[in-house]
Length: 159
Image 1 (cartoon, rainbow, N blue to C red):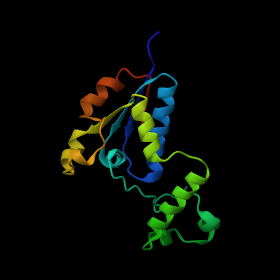
Image 2 (cartoon, helix red, strand yellow; image 1 turned 90 degrees about the horizontal axis):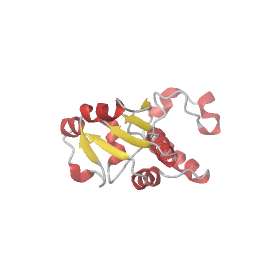
Image 3 (cartoon, one colour; image 1 turned 90 degrees about the vertical axis):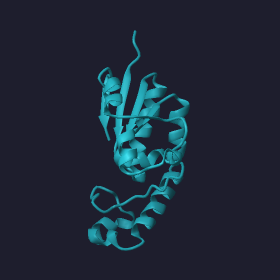
């Protein structure tokens, strides 16, 4: 019996969008899947040594707001200076209180579980990123690298 494969493309670089690819990848690896995550564009933020991931409720109408703010606080209000920082602190506190692993913990779990993490070389070059900004244990490649694995995968996800 061949090993099942999961291919994920991670494109978002916010705190809330860092969780889905890492949770799915670590879970699949624990279930015996061979897993690769291709990080491109803003998803590359998840691979940085010094992550500064934030949450933004702006443009995210499905985000539950504390204290029923979604009912009385205008959506434009989340664009006020300091709101993004406040939302990030609140989200991190909620995650910790609920016992949810941090992004760093999930990322390390993925590395320990041999999830192959690939940084999109084109995006690294496009945004003049320095490979020294990224954690160790990752690889660099292009779309062809992703398709080589994804073409043989049982499950392909775009996050």
